[in-house]
Length: 425
Ligand code: MN
Image 1: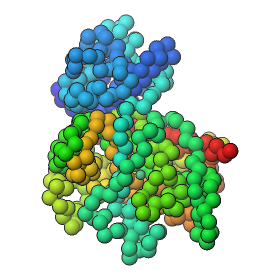
Image 2 (image 1 turned 135 degrees about the horizontal axis):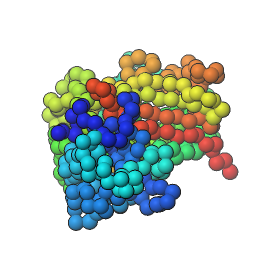
Image 3 (image 1 turned 90 degrees about the vertical axis):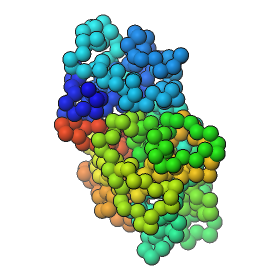
Image 4 (image 1 turned 120 degrees about the vertical axis):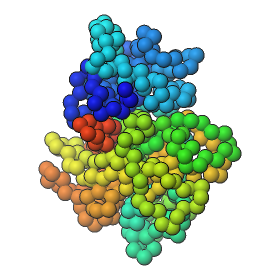
């Protein structure tokens, strides 16, 4: 049976609203208290299946001469072209099925290889050689443009022709749960004649999805949109933290730099493109028609519901400050990647392509606090009282997301981070 078949069931118990049914099988990297070695795992319900152990037991197909699940990341798996639905995903799906005795009836192995999620430490699943961030939500670009330049000049002349992007910092891509130290930098408020140096006062989030490149290309090789789509291994939640005040002073003329370099939080689970196939949808109509190298006729957007929770340090409950959807993106990840290669720029296994902030059409669906508070002028109400315009020390922001299937959901877990005070000397 196809690993995406909605009727599949696992012998591992999975709640109806779990992010991780047998149809998902996202890849992550784990360690445990009694075994600190890193190994690749898939999530299933409230458990993870240790693929290092399954590989040792000889139960997984060998995708290369060397083992791939004890290398500390999913890069070796990706580099061997064992893309999700390939032999590995099919085999894992088989092993976890309710009617498959191999693992189910091997009590000793099942007990060791199926580990409660609460007992594992999740590590960054991907070695990220390069990180590129885009600016591809029309609603987000229009909102920010309206605030910065006025309604009539909101979208720059090139925006409808080019998936606009910049090269971000791969060194600070961290896994969900890693604290984020408030960045410091040059600040220059309107009306001040000289900049000062200090902690950001306008620390923000960006609700994004990260596409993981699973296939290397040579310098000079140009991918069309179909090849770019083929080269994407999977997707994860992604919070591209941004210091708006640092950004605003530094971004002319070369774009964002330190205002976005201090941290970017990647979800711990990489959901394969194959698991998301049933949720592929067409994006918004593109008018004017893109240049030929950017044209796509297949559906390369995904219907993934996304939400952002903000929880102050002393709060018992968080506030959902935004509910959005990945399907709103004007430029697809495939178009972004095709454009990225259009100059002859090479790609590496593990490269991270940030979608850009995902904002929907109405105010409750904006993907940044800059937009939700409209530049700080309309404070966001919190459920336990108090308000926010930008983030305060101690705040925890958690992104969540899932695609809803018939009786199951393909979820992403979470991408979470707490703001720690700036390290002022
Ligand atoms: Mn961004």
